[in-house]
Length: 605
Image: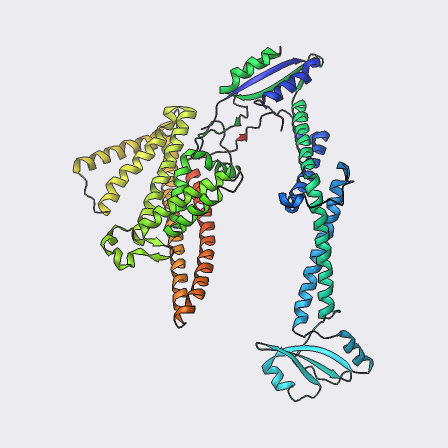
């Protein structure tokens, strides 16, 4: 749910304003209303750039922090560093590492090219050239070599890899006919020289990393404190910027937002210090900050909501509305009981070892794993094996959901999810504008349900009573009248008729496309199961002729690599496609507007 906000105004004498801001910051509940852009303020712009720079330095140094048992054994060689030059020293080492890594990558490519020619010495080539001989390096296809160079006494094969021949020519200058061979551009250093240079660069990188490790161990906490100070200065300067000066700069005026449940306590604390505050009326022009409040389960899905956009203050919080569906969609996309159990085990094991900030993610993974396990059991898929085909499971074979049934189930889920989105949109419209403006939206829902009962149930060979059928015709007709002639209260019937017909076209065409989008739940789940089965077959078939005592090892390797790849690909699909169904199909039908401003109270970091 979206927490209700109250708007407050504060009026303070200019000499007491600093004390007031210190007290307001200690309360930590007021989201200051923005009336001026921060981008035009030089102080804030400078602080923002400094905070960004320190943040980058901290993120870079985090890679080099020693383990706790190593810190006591390490003594920094940079103890004399001051706060002002930490960043410059870190940047120098970072540039050293980046330059050495880039040069190493180039040399490794050259060494790889030189490896096919063997570990020869360039000084021997130099002596030949001084004696009047020209040494050149060539490569060509083995068939071309046999035709053009096999009989030449001046050509010497150095290596042959697959169908490519690597050879050299030792001749008086210009004596050889190059034919179709390609002249190779050689490195200026031989294999040994390249190896020595690479090792030298790697030593340079290790030395720089050692220095950075020492800096991280001794100064990282200081940098974090500096960043906190800058963030606090940013918040303070922003509040000062949003303050209005009244009565010839004698009075300071500030507006802010406070959660309604904390308003009375805030009023009491502010009044206790002798400062003036008053609750204000909220206008349509106000941008109200959004604070979400959900239970322990739906709170896990708030990052998914924020990934797209926070709702605006006049909307419903979409988090608890889509959370169960997202879990179901994930389970249908992954769809393997074995993979689900693996996710459950991984989440339970890692939750004991990770920080508190990561635990909600693992809890979410645990719920995803449970849903996937249930779907896998119902569909009979377990690590790529089809339980339906196991003879011992023949007695319960008819209870499994087949792939054909799963396709129909996916479309049915899509139909009700789209309809559910339209219901949420109708409820939102009722809250925002009143019942009469939402009647057409509700009419569409009942019209679609009535038509589904009349047309779809007989197609599924489900007989309905004639009385129910007539009732559904009546509901559909009544809803059609509301949709066509009362879609915009206050307008003339013929104007409503035109907009109603246009809305009907958009709704019907959109409904079909949206429902068909949910077939991806079936397709992705089926693809993952088929790939798992393919890897199982590969492990069995490719090792069928091996000794039984040796066979288990390559079979195990194929299964581990294959299923690891399948799980990785399936996890990506199982996250991306449910996101699409929520953000596109559901949000569109729920008429989600978004654009909410995150509640960020003025408080000390």
